[in-house]
Length: 317
Image (cartoon, rainbow, N blue to C red):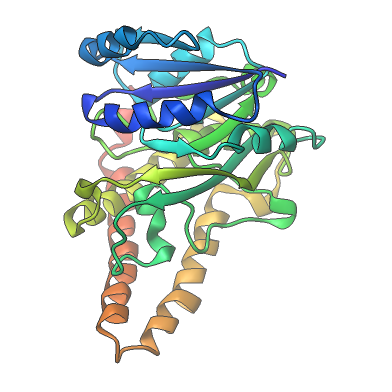
């Protein structure tokens, strides 16, 4: 079973991490693979990678519209694998990563698999584990259902059957990051389309399929945190709009509805994470974590409101 690994990159700043990650990609225990790098409108990065002359890696340059979804779709179109995986350009896979993902596709009815994402960083203790989603990692409270089924995978470490993408379509061009813009949601949207087509048991979380996400210094500060939380709110609003407009539900699975996952996580914050810190107000560290938990709710809510009220016209274009 051929697995296609697709990596999208747009900035030369990510090249040092990508070059380290390439060694891990080449040394995967799973050998039946192809590695595809799609450079998003950056000839300098494209030429640098071409000069490395790594025969096992195919390199393509996207010269059309910029954006993560467009670059990933290009990777899908040029790939040949039965399974198509995506990993960020600043993520480093464990040696068994592909092997563990491949194992899950032996389970009947599985059409998408996401893996574990752990941070590789100089840890910042004031950021609670419940908010690791702000740095693109699996977080405490990540809603995992029965039998490790989830509503959506996380874009840093995700995979799909080619057959499923043929049925539901590729990533939506109106969703996904463009450059340093933090508005995403393309992976949630595509997973919701898979669930609507195949049912609520079709998207799987594989905790043993591990990658490490490098957290750069510019993402370890409060301004980034607030911007990331606000952008997440906009992402939720846009993704919800796309679901209403572009998904014709065939399998109405109430436990997997879009809003239910958000409600479950919010319930977890309000009833477990925040009360836990309220009991530990003697600790300055816990006070700072409590502040961020509350602020995350506020900024996500503000972004959600902004996304619905101000940005609807963008989705109609």
